Length: 543
Image (cartoon, rainbow, N blue to C red):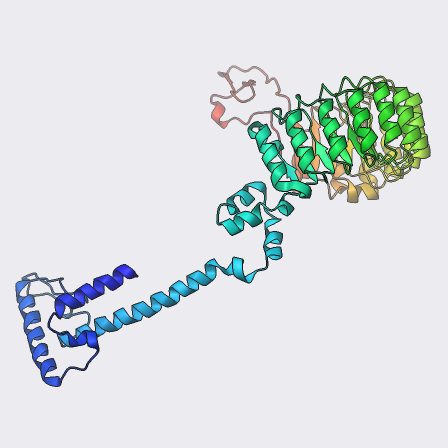
């Protein structure tokens, strides 16, 4: 706008150098107007004869061609101005209006810039910032000093997850964050941040005394010293995950348990240096424990399970995946003392038998999720007892439970109406009859969302027909079910177009013919056609 005003002022001075009265705003007499009008008209006529002239800033357009057929409209000015004085007054009017418009526009812009800072209270801006992620907050902090203060306010950094930035997180980054967040920080995850050291954690614990949840999974450099600093400065700690921290042992567990009496969640998965004695100390010091994970811990024995059972009766979540030392003795005790149990993961615990399932059905009526992958000794009798007592089951994983038959599916369909996820992969004794029990159950028709039938060789197209009644099914896995055809898969896919079907059809060996054969690059099978470009490969995945 300033450039336009300068251009217009310069034009006025060039076209009316002797008309000083324009600057004072006085009115010219009619004689001067008439004389100027005559002079202007003569100049325009002269320009018409000489050719095209674009010197006028108001858009006078004159054709300079000698053609006699030119349109007269091209000889007329776009603005009909009869005198230089009137043109000057018009220019002055434009200048004055542009000044006013520019002032008003600048005022509006200034008001918009200051709107968030002046119109909204600080608390409301902080509330808006609380919905932003870390990168957006950092960008907002670069807008102005005021925004920087608000964006980096500790209230916006109460929960921090640095897992996605693991390669870029050095100790100094964690220290700066702890200084910025201070007492506001309650949840922190530095999973896989392998550059974090005990010194960095010391500074964190010093400045963040209200820390409640901490995840240091796969932080290889951390040792018992970190737990010592946490025990001194973070008395409100309720959940700690030290999974895959090989330098932490029983002494570290004892140190932190002695000061943090509110601990409710422990994850010591793959901590090979924590022994059965360390689990005993943990159980005795944490009576409020609700979640315990010890995946891959060889020290998770029957005695350790009994310690947990006697001292932690409020347990809700237990993860004993790959704890091969466990047997029925430890699990039965746990079920007797922990009736609130909702999730139990006993995958790869090959020493368990039906006694564990019977105890679950007898004592754990709140059970909702059970993962029994590779528990090969579980049979239909055990699942019958469990199903009769655990009516709230929502998810059950029976992958590689090779003793399971159609009877187990009948018991689940009759007694567990809330099942949403059912995994039966590699249960080779499951047939179409078992799937019929699931498909004919009214509750399964409404609630079943995911069904996995991978590597069930006895399943045929009849099973697919039974599943047509499951109207809310979202995913169906039928990899390597060799008796299921593409026709059946297409049939259920047409009925439910949003259903994700994961299937694989092995290539068939065609009958040799006299025609030339070519090799298909997609499935590496022999195709009896001259060109594979028009050949549909016999293997496919339908999603």
